[in-house]
Amino acid sequence: MYEDKTLICKECGKEFVFTAGEQEFYAERGFENEPQRCKSCRDARKQAAKGEREYFVTVCSECGKEARVPFKPREDRAVLCSECFAKSKLG
Image: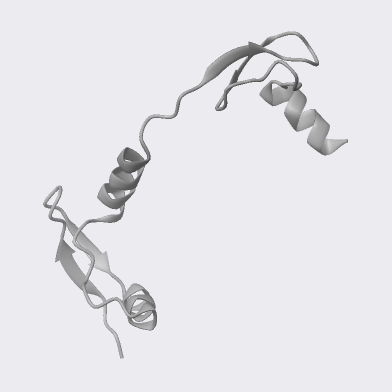
């Protein structure tokens, strides 16, 4: 029923394919408008909307190395670096 369509991205001006599968997905969800941006421009827009993530530097409670975490550490809670955190998930 649906056929692939070639559309022009309004952000970068490049052509992209709006596949039959994507059209079916849009129809199932009740979306009436076709996408106006290619996948890479949509992804870049989503990332920009999220904003820059703030990281905090602290010391790993397990190994004592410096750790960068995406939350403000509290003194009463242990904080693990990414390596120690991964090890704790495995064991």
